Length: 447
Figure 1 (cartoon, rainbow, N blue to C red):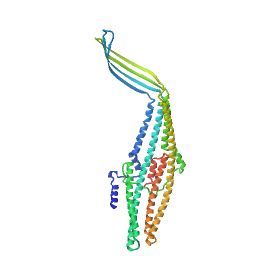
Figure 2 (cartoon, rainbow, N blue to C red; figure 1 turned 180 degrees about the vertical axis):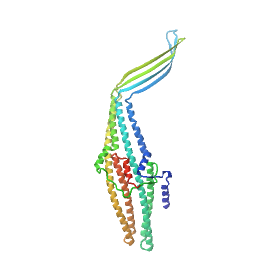
Figure 3 (spheres, rainbow, N blue to C red; figure 1 turned 135 degrees about the vertical axis):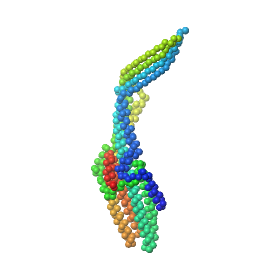
Figure 4 (tube, rainbow, N blue to C red; figure 1 turned 60 degrees about the vertical axis):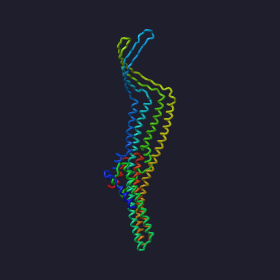
């Protein structure tokens, strides 16, 4: 068992030297901005979404194209009149044409341009959500490591305390003041504590690797939460205001609102398929022919032609097999889907705000309760130790009191971390989470 502990401890210490560094929450967050793949993906998606605007605008601007050609021609002309000569013509034609097409009335292009503006809004809202998610994921990974470290420290301290109690039970048995049962109970608790220490070591390594996935490296140490930190209630301290803020300001709600407006535009765009289109078309071209005509004697010839045209081109759709009407019905159904999705997103945002608010307020109450329980558990352990020494308590009472004390310490640490994370989730639900909130929590850490 000791060998397993040693091997796992060496594995934890075996990170490459170049990755070893001390960090606080703010540093971890900034490293995540540079390394995290999910955030990088969201940033690229935002950049791609920004290109929807020039693409939509292009449908309102002129299109200019050019074409050129060269052709070799051979023509043999034979009259049906007997004895008429054969006319052999060989010539080369060259030409080019430049065409400008300016849409004058294409309603679907106008609606597409309106959609492109909304698609930029959608991309920005989705990136805003990703910017909040990276705060939550970096903070979650950070505090997961801190809790795993605390759990390991407490498991090791509990194991040490049980070892001392085991030695005391053995001595008392040797002098005849205790039974072998005390020794067996202490040995069983010691073996269990060893297993818990192994589990804590393994959990710490898992949490450190989860942090590595976010920031690309494993810190040598993390700044821990100050022991006597004072947690603050939400401001404003009113659940209703946070719910209203979430329904109005959540990036997810903003994204879904943009999606609904895009769906509205899509209906108009599809209905434009029933409308005529009008374009201004202008061309400028040149063609030339060079060759010879032969009826026994070659007669060379050549020509140059320049053409310029300006006109209006009207196109009126009459029947497209029912496709336009079908796409119209499809767009209407998709708008109703987008409307339902928006309602669901608003309700989810409100629920997230309520859960996060209760997580903060109930978390603070739990922290106070665990702080008082910690004092009581320490007093209970001291009393049981004294009672064991004078013979009014048995060994199992001391072991139970020790376990309660260490469990309370771990629960207190977890309650503090969970409350801080709930504060961040509350800000995220309202769409106001940013680096300043990371800085505020970072100020609560040991320097």
